[in-house]
Image (cartoon, rainbow, N blue to C red):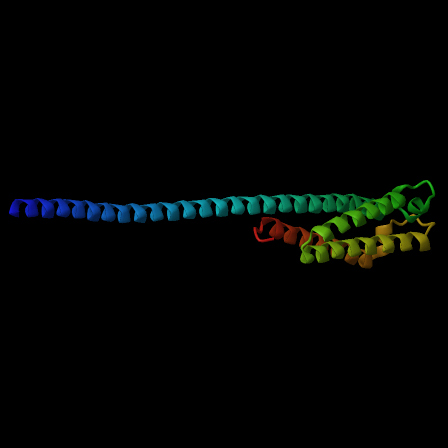
Length: 196
């Protein structure tokens, strides 16, 4: 029986060894499976995060482009008004007061366009740009009003609007130009900023 006992013990040891080996292999296989699942989960999360960051960047770039277009439109309208104000400055009040002179009406129309583009800039923001664009609009309107008052109060002179307005008209023009420079500087900052 000693041989049979040895054979049973050997067989039992082999079975036990196989079970232990299978268990150890199973534990390592389970551990590896968990590691793979965690790695896949981390990879999927990183991919999702990367896609979300790309979408945010696209959205931000799109918003910057919309703002840029609003700012450019505002500046283009400002330029049209500025050219009209310059034309008024160089005219005699007699010429500017003439019913056939279209410059005051064209400046007034251009101011309307500037005002409409101001609304777009204000909507697109940020509030600091809205404040600067409002400052530009107000200084531009003030210069136009001053010019028209000079024309209305001196309709029959050969003096230019600029000559009659003198330093007070110069101060309004300088204020308008300074407001424009401040707007442009801030617009550049806003458009180059990734957080805006």
